[in-house]
Length: 336
Image (cartoon, rainbow, N blue to C red; front, side, top):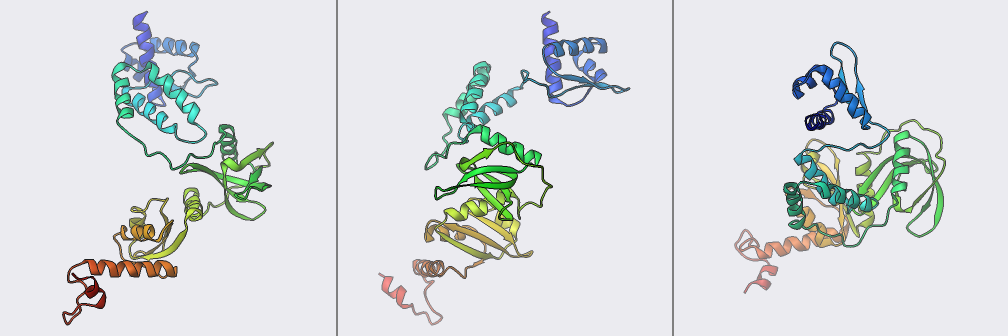
């Protein structure tokens, strides 16, 4: 009985690792006959695992989705990765409680050697907490919106804008985007005939959903870039469009989407749309690019960069000397 149970677990692990298994290969892996494999597959079916049989000379077996969630077999690395991922998901609005429950169930049955690994990672890593908690998200709303995106069904929902007023919106949903502490729905606004982003915590879906709609070309750069442009710009106090003398892919590799959006111009230049709460922060972001760039506005940013340029020149010995070896007034004024 013990040998049969161990073989069943091994068979289940193989079926979960690869989609299709020829019967003869499973028999070789398990060291049994193909007839024994057929009996073991029947036992797994009796336990609730949906195993399909494929016919033909290379006929075999595959584990498919069923009506219920059967137990999973994870190897050591998979178990550790899932445990860590679930703890990290605890910070995602809308799924915190479910992630915590799943993590607790998994860690309860982890072998001691794996529990020590997970515990060490949790004890000796510290996430940076958000400056303020994100808005609460109803998981049922997320599920409803995701289903509407998948099925391409029109949505009617009550939407509360940033001013607190509510109205009914009709939209063709495209994607859900998790951005910082918030979730956004990217959708085609039917009444405004354009793409829009909607904060999920302000959406109250109406049922039933509307008719199906044909797919549209997505917004430029995709849903995440569209949200980045809108959500970041809305939070910036100072904004700028900067011409950068470098290919777009090289600039994008240095820019966090939360800091700016890169727009391609040609093979050697691109435009960086960026911003920050202060002019100083914005100047630092530009300096960290390590590429030549041109700033033509806004005027207060241009003035600030010129002031920084003069300050850095004065701070560099000999940099303020002219061709005749004399210093400018600013350098004299700040010389000892």
